[in-house]
Length: 76
Length: 214
Image (cartoon, rainbow over all chains, first blue to last red; front, side, top):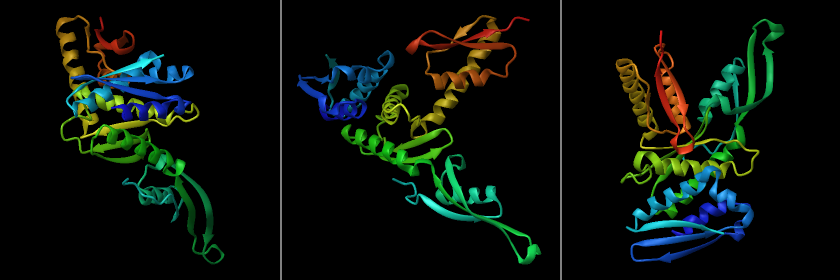
């Protein structure tokens, strides 16, 4: 899950080295925390939040494979 | 990767159109995305007695297929991180790049009402257009979903059109994205008893069909 979000985020931002992804595993859920450089926030959120929404959709599809619910949090 | 790796070919034809048609066939790509240079164009035959016109061109496809390969690699990377074992076949068309995903046994790639496929398509487009100078458009398809969806939208438009005519009242369709709304508008374009408009913002934007009063 972590690697998936990292791959997507790094391919969209101007500062791929500043992309940090953490995973907090719960019993039924996985929380994926994404941090990017301040100036790249817009790139991972997108117009009207469309990029963030697309990442969440892809993440939930992927999480079906492991029978867990995955949540993406974009942190400042 | 199923497309031809040959990026530049030399072909001959009776005229330019003929040569371009041959090149498009050999490279297996749409003619509109071919670029070419005329190498030789002469009228052969002795003193012009047998006017046999021939033209030789060197043809290649725009970007030499780099954009296509880049898009394919990107999508394959995402799919493998999603632990989905699939093949991606790309081709260049007049509308842009089309990537076809094969191997979605459980419908995971398409998702409910195509939302996963749309999300993958959106992200791939963001990636391909990350420097603003490039305008490459990528369309993703899987198991013929786009075509099926197109037919569903046309059917939906026709059903709503019937309802509007029967009741004389306007009816709103379910929210759809811009390409789907376009199909909807087109489906009813020739019907003079109706008119269609899009209303609402963002995710909630939908087509409304109105009766035309005479």
